[in-house]
Image (cartoon, rainbow over all chains, first blue to last red; front, side, top):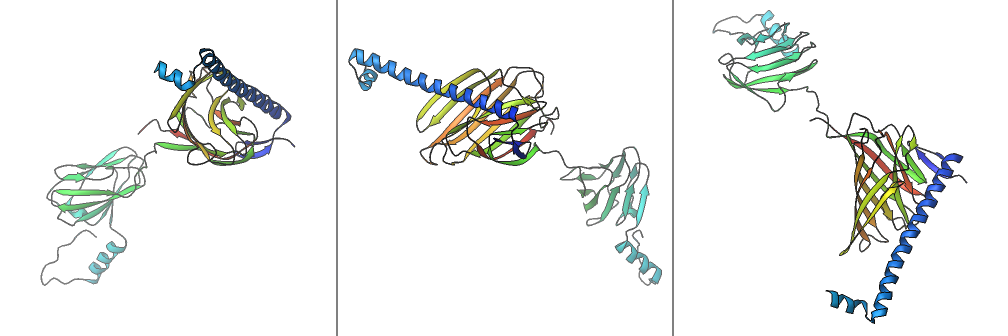
Length: 66
Length: 291
């Protein structure tokens, strides 16, 4: 079933070109969001790795650094 | 019939009675084709201004008494302005009477009058709706073309929307029915509870203008677009109300600023969910350039 567009107030099915453009947009956005999530997870993992190396908990590190 | 002074013993004729009655039901008319200064005999009558060029009606003192009234109307193309001569003329509205406008001049004393305009040119509102509220349901894209014109410099867009699944809402600017997908930059400030965070996107293919956790919680985006029709950078700010899974502890406030760095004169917008579909409504308003 074709995707639906509200085109200037009128509901209709997307043309093949519109659907292709939307799917490309959506894939690009999903990819971007996934990369953001992965970057955030990596940041947290890196932080935890440093804490592990120092043998500190997050609360202890916070108390030390203020 | 102009105001008469009857004296004791005078016989009131049928013709006079008829004339007086006629003035009550079909007011005595005095048409003027040039600027005019009111005289005492104008009390209770209708002054009709009929001039293609601007005229004035001058109001002087000591001609009328408290409670006297007269009606002024303008059928000419030239604006007629009620003007204080030696009497004062106050009004809560304009003293200028446009074509087919009118007003009542009321005297509170011999030298003080009030003009009550009965037809005035309405001033334009601060916001003009350029795209009436439009509903959309289960849509993967929403477009609005030919809504951004040089009539307005800045625009307000309000979008109420919800999604079944967790999605973000994005916007692209359009020209000639085609969306532009380059050179969008944005900076977000996100607050929920006591936690704040920020994020920046550069060289993006769209602006992120909304977030939803899904579950059909209502989200609202109040977005201003600045100078989309000017051949310069288009900027925007958006306030985003996000209800992340519930309406209490899930409430997020998101402030977004952004720009699109092309010099394109955009004339439309496109709303896009990151996936799935959106249901809701939107309207677009232009900010008036003049008072």
